[in-house]
Length: 154
Image (tube, rainbow, N blue to C red; front, side, top):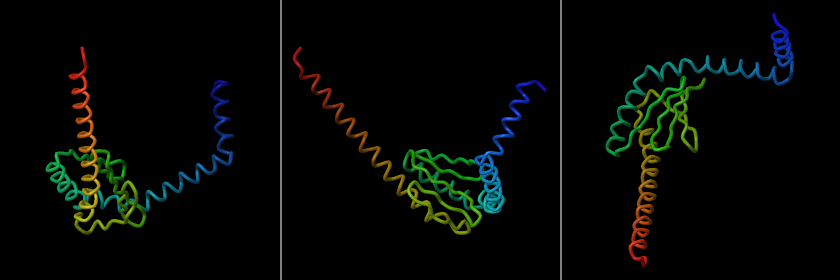
């Protein structure tokens, strides 16, 4: 073992003795226990019919709004996103939680996803209207700028 390898091992050993190192190992152990406790909910979320019908219904709703809705699994978390509006379904030791941009709400995955869909689509519709208003304002400003350019003396 070279001098540098030995020095690196000694530094790692000293870091693990520091208070931050002990807290870090406790945090990792707590994260592991939380993941094990939420594993049954994560499995039900991944294999159950709730997410399948949620994806089907949101895809249809997005198509009618001319908006692509993206679905992503991030570990055990299921993320839904369109036009920077996010919804995450996060398994916890006590069940599944729907994480909206401004709040969290417990979710019953044994029921139909219709109330969740309506709530998220309301946020999406609000965002679509904001985007359309911004586009209209930009278009009006550009048209006004073009008029000013046409009327300017040469």
